[in-house]
Length: 296
Image 1 (cartoon, rainbow, N blue to C red):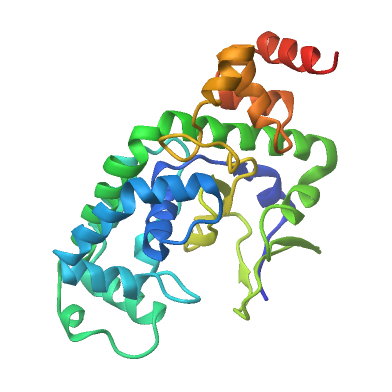
Image 2 (cartoon, rainbow, N blue to C red; image 1 turned 60 degrees about the vertical axis):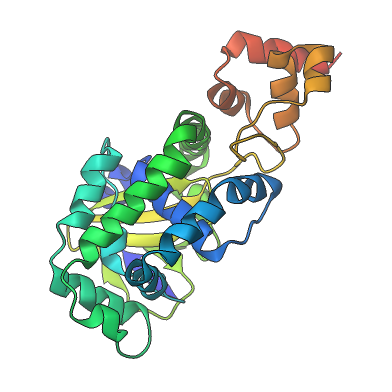
């Protein structure tokens, strides 16, 4: 198993961070596999997968880059810069674009077995191609839904932060994602792979939720480490044009009113009152009134 060794100060200073680029990369992986894990993802893939595949069919070099970079057990590091608090998509993707071409090729070699395809081996434009593809996914398939996705991510952060205050970091980390758990003795298991342990004491440690079913780790040596995980309550049971947040059905909305229906639909999976408030954008009093009505 892969694990990180840290001191108590590193754990105490760790924080949750929302990253537009991490959300975009998770969405890129979903487009690459083309396999949905719930109805929301199926709707989103139906809307965006054809255009994504058409783009790669017209650009075989970038198609090879994606296949090489999304390795079976390792992602090419330059595709996933470690998220930073408050960083915009444009700021983050600029870090992809400015990676040295030789370093990008080294990362691709590590992410896949065997030598690089000849079409990639001597190219110096791979970071630029990766940045352009990520920008395309962001602008076409993530940005139109970003306000609603961000509310889902913020709701997850609110719930996990409250869990930290109630039960400490160990309880949160054990439930973060498969393969992640607190081992004791200031050790955090980050995956089930047999990688050497890493000493990260003194570095910034961040936890980054994304809405697609995805997870990975990233780091900038000695400075910043990140665990990216699928957020809770990704609205798998809600249908809608964006496949993530949608509105309640017309019939239910007509019967109960759109605000009340939106809350009740979300109760198909567990959500705290705080999460419901963040996800729906309604006030705490409005959500509370719906829940009180449901208990009558």
